[in-house]
Length: 302
Image 1 (spheres, rainbow, N blue to C red):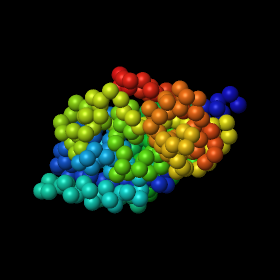
Image 2 (spheres, helix red, strand yellow; image 1 turned 45 degrees about the vertical axis):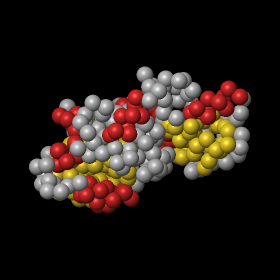
Image 3 (cartoon, rainbow, N blue to C red; image 1 turned 90 degrees about the horizontal axis):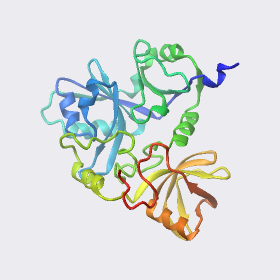
Image 4 (tube, one colour; image 1 turned 30 degrees about the vertical axis):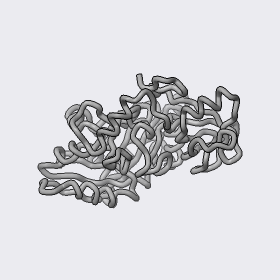
């Protein structure tokens, strides 16, 4: 036995799609739109970023993967078509092709003790998840060679639910599950904590709002891990402190979940000894290991 606990778990993420952005002006176009700095891809295979409304709310978030011909955006599959349309709105005369290529790719995640060798099999991009090293590796493989690429990784094939349980324990939110697209600021969805925003790059859509939030003393709402003494009910459900709704429960896996909460109200409930409840189940907030913010601290951003 010995090694069995270290076996890599591999999950195909059926709900992820892929948008390709290629052509001579691809990098320049993305650089002016997204929250992160495209120049990071000179030294890294992928980065995490979002495309915002002019008011600073997240419309889409994605992993940007560098390829020989341009870039692949690993995003929520149901949103891939909309993402193509949105980027195309900004294209103007740029020499760029933007396509929904979800049917041509398989997205998977792999985690466990042994990191994968970067690069991976032919026809597959394998890279450390740029949000958080503990998430493990991400695989974006051409559909026709995906089986071979995943077989080359080895390990246990597990369900996407196992991946979500892994993500929830680590405290990494996912759009559409833990925060609503079109209604959430990057700080609320932890993009500032998970390397999804550059505060030093040139302008991008919604930048002024994001910059203002970065320089405020604290961000009121955040997605945070929650823990109960029994299985949590499936979200989305309101989280109550007494009778007051202070946020929403999103993804759950057993007794753990993620909830978008007003942290000032969490601090007040703690101070006053008021239980937090979702769907009749009492829960408590635990900050993720990577958090630079605190609950109820006046100066949240270090």
